[in-house]
Every structure is written in structure tokens, then in C-alpha cells.
Length: 127
Image (tube, rainbow, N blue to C red; front, side, top):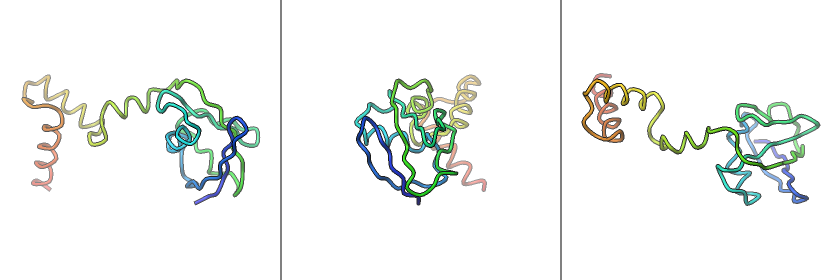
């Protein structure tokens, strides 16, 4: 874990983050920390003149212990979290695509959750 500070509108908060965390990994934490509506808002980080504004970026990989990250929040321009919430926490994208294929083929007669659980059980039996 790495100890850094986040600053937004003059309020500084120290936090521990994993060096391997992406910007997406800390979005919910930062939005809650500074009372922003998640996922409607997106936290953009700046540290040592480097802007981190894409969810796939890793702002902590090269930073030093104690670095300060300035936070600017705005409306999200990336549907990543909306898409993640729409799928739900238990169903993977690949499973959703397989379900859509099964519906199109006429072999799925249940809702997606029941279909996914049945598919997973069948895969476990054949493993």
C-alpha cells in the first residue's frame, strides 16, 4: 500500500492506495470522499503536472510516498460504471453475450440470472 493525499477544493485527505490501482479502481472512493454523485461524476487526478483522466490509467505506479493528487470532478464521459452496474455484480460480459446468443437460438427460456447459474453449474459438472 502507498500513502498519498488527495486534495479537492482546498480539502486534503490522506489515503492508502495500492500502487497497482487504476483510476477506475479509486473512482467510488474519491466520489464518496468528496461527496460527489457516483457514477454520474468522475474524478480526474493531476499530480506533478501529469493529468490522469482515463479510467484505464494507473496514476500510482510511478508516484512517490506522500505525493498529492489534485482532484477535479465533472460529469462522467465514460459509460464504464453504468455498464458495470447494468450487468450486475455476478454476470460477466461473456456470459451476457452467450445468453443473448441462446435467446436468439431459442434455447433460453429463463431470465439471464437463472440461465447463467444453470450454465455455471453445467460447466462445473463437466470440469
